[in-house]
Image (cartoon, rainbow, N blue to C red; front, side, top):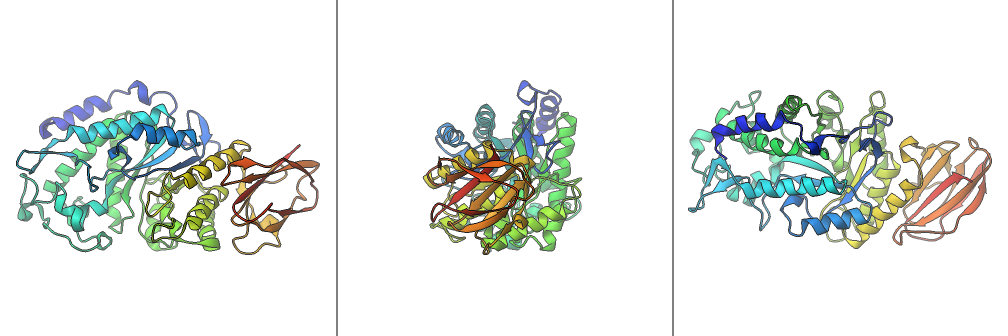
Length: 457
């Protein structure tokens, strides 16, 4: 597509609300604002996938079918192109140079395929517009925006170097400072906006999309704020409501950088706290619960689009990944998705079992009405068990490795039915009766991962 026609095409597309976006798209639940609703019903987002830029993989349909078959409904979509076999968003000429005035239709066809297949399967796609790892080290040497790789500008004209050898966490590439509030690089911003315009000309037509500005950025606040406002303005033109967030780099949620999201609900309608999934054990729970409490005056969904932890990676073990997944769910957070291998469990058989079991548990109760209630537990060691409850009506617990705790059921009356769920087997054990009105000792049937559910008979 020629650059001079991009804006006109975008306006034509955005002014028409196509059938795909009609009905009841994803939105923050009106009744349970810590969660999402889709198709008019509150929904817990659960997922895992083999890759982050999922639209670039082969056998996409089969992968999404597998996710749906185990109860998953949530994937991550970095708009990234740095892996072997990926394509970039701009047209590549026969001489190998890119022309930023023209789009690569194959890239955008793949992107739309993900949104369409996801919509057909009830799967929510969380987009990350910019992935910093495409703009430093080896990936930058292949990137069309690198002045060595395109016919549109030189290093002097663009302000971009041909090499950025250091880790992108240093934010050395001025690509992420082009906006008017920072470097005001009009030449570079022109092409960035054209890429986002093309993305929005597709994504705003689909009801199953959330937006995140960056992947674990350490950049200036003005960068993400610019793109959040830009996307929201384009959506307003199209009479579509969109939900934006930013993902900051620090692993500690108390770091001031995270305040840029927490303190601006008018800009960021939800928060992605995935970096907390570097934390372990009780600290992982406690950090998320502090944020949840902080936002209690104006509750918003807290998403976890990537949960680290796999024996194959550097950020924890399989056990860490599984525990983080379940603590997020029992902790009242809006989404939980296993990060891609090797740093996460992806959609491996282990991930499938956990997604399936989480859906079994939450389908058997109304988790949306519950609150994290570890205060109702006693005789508990750190990281031994976690509780969410609608006191007097329903109680659900997660045991990372067996154990026994005492549950205060003095706020309930009558007889309850206790069911144990063997998580890795996705299997319910036969129910047993429990009498409420006092305390109840709950001892897991054995070592390993267990969930317990207590509902009135």
